[in-house]
Amino acid sequence: MTAARYRARVRISGVLLLCLGTVVAAFVTHAQDPPKYQVDPSWPKQLPKNWIMGQVGGMAVDHHDHIWVLQRPRSLTPDELGAAQTPPRSECCFAAPAVLEFDGLGNLLKSWGGPGYVPDWPTSEHGIWVDAHDNVWIGGSGAEDRQVLKFTNDGKLLLEIGHPSTAPENNQDVSILGQPAGIEVDEAAHEVYIADGYLNKRVVVFDADTGAFKRGWGAYGIPLSQIDNAPPAPYDSAAAIDKQFRNPVHCAHISSDGLIYVCDRSNDRILVFTKQGKFVREFFVHKSTLGIGSVWNLTFSHDEQQKYLLVADGEDNVIWIVQRSDGAVVSSFGHNGRNAGQFHWVHQSAMDSQGNYYTGEVDTAKRVQKFTLISGAGK
Image (tube, rainbow, N blue to C red; front, side, top):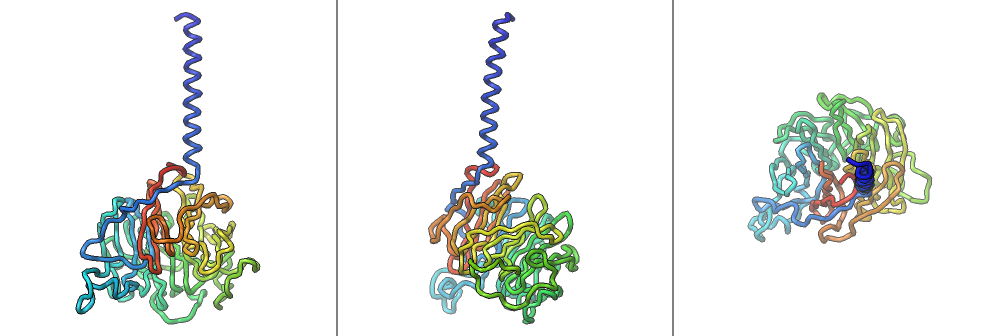
């Protein structure tokens, strides 16, 4: 090879490497952009057996990328259950079982549970989690729901933490819960975190195998003994920052770097803790939101660093995309309404391993939706 030809080849190789580097850098930058989604109006498919779904009290995605929905059969009206009336008033419908398992295409794979399924089945289903062993955890936010139940994947009861009760709010009592709203299992530690809840104002942690109490805390990591059992005053966005959680403590989720993110819904904020309950930081999401608050649920983005939080806001009926590092809102999607991609009281959310995002609604919406990730955040 001549010297001239060698120099030409080196120049060409350098240009190719520079171009390749530019493409890789652009890809990495694009992948770290805020995620963008497109609603899939075909998901899920029509339920079998003339079934209809009620309010969505819980959603979770398991390690098979199956989507689990905990819905409330008792929230359905006689009009919606026309076929179940005596005599039938219309062709549709019958209440679906409370626990529904879907695949990514929207096919119903499994269903079980509902009122009377086991003696302490909750009166208002709220919160679901599927652990690495395919066990299904559910809670309830009804007036007497002071328990979390653990089932096998096909609905055999394994464990009960707490029990139904009419006792008043008591954040110091760890023998019962207080209308628990959210559940998540730390697999490595064999512990279950419970956002507790609609009556109590705390996070509590139990042994996931035995149900034994491990620890708990209130806002800013205060011990259970310092949590006020009195109902909070109405939320005022101009008032001093609330030193207690405000009902409901609606979710508790574990990040990939081992922090606990807690939804203080009516205070419009997220509080972050270590697994031992030490306060790390807080940030507000659309702090001017009144009513029943802006932070209903949160989901970590699909990228390895979980750079963003997707915050489901059932009062404003949008999904806020928030930087996890500082709480800055970088974008949002959704709008109040009942068309595909819109929301009415968006209540629950979950994400699969491909970054697709799922939501569930309560009040009169009573539906689930799938949003396909099209760019950004690890795509």
